[in-house]
Image 1 (tube, rainbow, N blue to C red):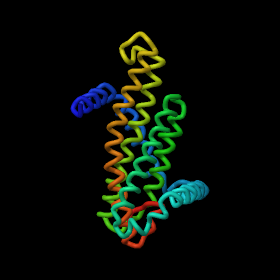
Image 2 (cartoon, rainbow, N blue to C red):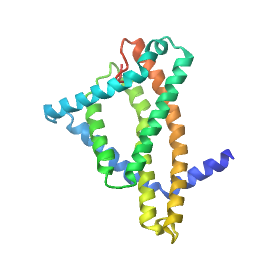
Image 3 (cartoon, rainbow, N blue to C red):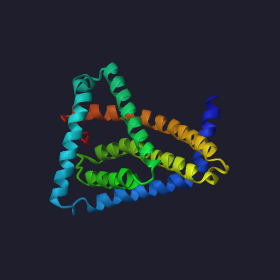
Length: 221
């Protein structure tokens, strides 16, 4: 059974590799543009993004604030709970990207603009050491690589429904069902990556807390 699932995931990745690669390159280009222009953006834009970050941090604090001291102390129960919460929130976020991507038009906002803002944020990071910066980027990359995959899953549903030949069938309904199976396979892969990422993130958060940070928002120690 396990090998059957892995085989379906592998076959789906093979068929959709060019779609995923195209979306991934668009995302990477957006992030790199944000990195390159982060120091050139007007002050008003940085103020707007900072306010958005503060609002997001307040929401994160409501969910994770009560776990700060238990995680700092290394309590296994708290770390498992936080890892599960991180995994759940990331899966919900990716599901939102997939659903909006089915409409195709929101992609410039959800992927391109989001990647650009992410790049701007990364340009403002100042890790205390190369190691802290490397571990932060490695931990983050496990989550970030799922963004284009989630977007491609939604785009695949849209293309299959509009052009059934995309799935090599004549029926739109059959093409839609096959695209949904593709999405399920892609989410199997994303769930695995995000589960690993969630554990890595909580371990990184603990290191940030031990170094005197608050971990909200999460940044290199």
